[in-house]
Each structure stands twice: as C-alpha cells, then as structure tokens.
Image (cartoon, rainbow, N blue to C red; front, side, top):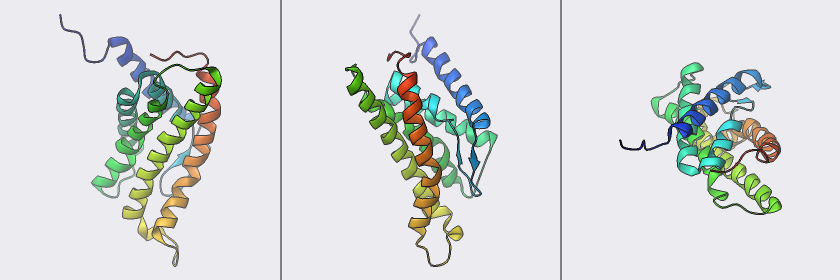
Length: 179
C-alpha cells in the first residue's frame, strides 16, 4: 500500500491548526477595520505549523486557512483580490518556517522564531498592500498617495498581530517540537 504524500498525523495536525485559527479569529478579535482586516490571533496556529513542518506545509496550511476565512467572512471586490487577500496572503505565512530548519541553542532559536514570524508577516503585509493599492484605491483620503494609504491601513493590523505572535510563539514553542 503506497504511503500518502502527507502523513495522516500531519494532515490531522494541519486540520486542527486551521480549525483553531478560525476559532481564534472569532474569539480574539480586538479590532475590526472598516474595509477588511482585524487584529486577532488567528495566524498563531499557522505560524506554529510552519515552524514545525516547514515552508511547504506551512504555506499549504496558510492557504487553506485563507480559503476557509474567505468562505466564513467574504470581502469581495474582484476575483484576483480574493486570491491575493486570502489564500495567497495567509499562505505566505508559511515562510515563517524557512528560518528554523535545524535545531539550535535556545537563544538562537528564539531569534530564528522572531525572524520567521517577521518574514511571514512582512510577506503577508506585501500581499495585502498590493491588493489595497490595486483594488481599494477609492478609499484613500484625497491628497494621500494610494500606496501610502494601503501600507498604513494594512500595517495597522499586521504589525500588532506580528508583535503578539512573536511573544506568544516564543512561549509556546518551548513545549512544541519541530518535526
């Protein structure tokens, strides 16, 4: 009997992580922004999955989470905007797993974790920024460059989430082993 491409245990872990991300998106929502985006802890399980299983499976988990998030709370302006703001943006969180490929000393690992979270969220911010610049230009205040509006709007929720996740994942990863 052939082995599955992704082991059953890993598939179950990804499914549980996505479910937990959806749950955290609902129960930890601190701020809901008017044109999409909110400050919450939904990305926390996706970042942990990326750090445990690497970029490929982290990207898969993030993309699937983005798809589920869209299904549960769609915000549609254009079909390409949906792809960029949901599966692509959250899939890019998987790159958080690229910086901790091998175990290291506790202090070095903490730095790698923080760098991974920053990398994943900078890539996510880039996707939201591009989407905002292209599809939400009409909401920019008169006289403000659209790129600046998009960057500042999206940074208002990505930066606080990044900081919160750096602090929380530092604590959680002490108890979670890398696969």
